[in-house]
Amino acid sequence: MANQPLHITNGDSLTNYLNELDIVGDKLTWQEMLCEGPTETTVDSAHFFNLRSTFLKDFYDIDLDVSELKAELNKLEDTTKYSEIILWFEYDLFCHINMLAVINLLQQKKINNPIYLVSSGRISGEKNLKGLAELSTEQLLKHYKAKVKLKPEDLQLATTLWGIYCGKDHNLFKPYIVKSSTFKYLSNCLKAHLKRFPDHKSGLNILEQNILSIVKDNQIKSKHHLLGYALNYQGYYGYGDLQLDRLIDKLNIFFTLENDHIVLNRKGHEALLGTHNFSAELNNEMVFGGVNKFDFQFNKTLNKLVKTIVNEH
Figure 1 (spheres, rainbow, N blue to C red):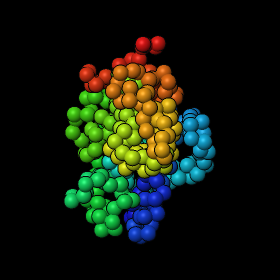
Figure 2 (figure 1 turned 135 degrees about the vertical axis):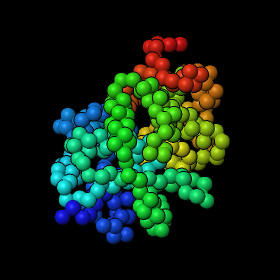
Figure 3 (figure 1 turned 180 degrees about the vertical axis):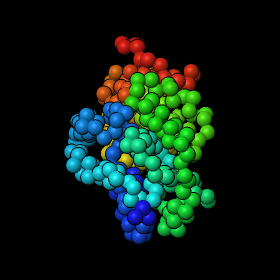
Figure 4 (figure 1 turned 90 degrees about the vertical axis):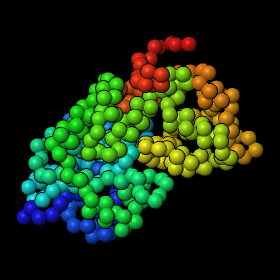
């Protein structure tokens, strides 16, 4: 009997929260971080799982439990028993890239159930953007009640954007930054994504520059202290501990420990001023979807990605 929804959530903490609140329906937990590493348009192929397993192992020493992932995705094999599908994804880039993949997968499987989106971000009267799992019970239930039904053009847009992400030319995102859609935070996330490529002057992306600025402007006592700041002040990225920890490690060449404080060294100051391009020293083989991070640089003046010229001095 098709009388209850299927909820697709972006992680365990939210699934547990929905279960605590006895929100009716089956839950499918999406356990991925597709905003980093290689992807391809077909989301649940053996090749896709293989790509992801290799990446997560090499970069984060995570063993992807493919059987657990497949068990979750099996809930999509027969959706006739569900009245609707409800996507629970947040305002940030981490969530948005996962959401595009999920919508693409639903389209790929030709699933015809009505699809709704519950999203969070700005909460009236509060300064910081908030994730769904951070909302109070009352706020979360209010968001659920205000869920938005996705129209065919929304689903088409998500599929198109997933295709661009898996492709070689991420400048194709640019027209969509100014296009209005049901996805309230999409424009912010696309802008944020382009700034994940190295700046054409410093060779650091915006997240890396932000971490150096935190060190410059605050009394940072330890790496752990710095991680706390980076997690709280990252805007629309939604990166987790693991990702930011890795970034901080890569930025070690810009820091020095002095009198129990982390301070910028000369390279750190040069990087923030943009007087030297540090791309070569930071080359860490990161891939975003279909593109190597260091194959492009973000040119602020042109407001677009330009191909990196090798051995540029």
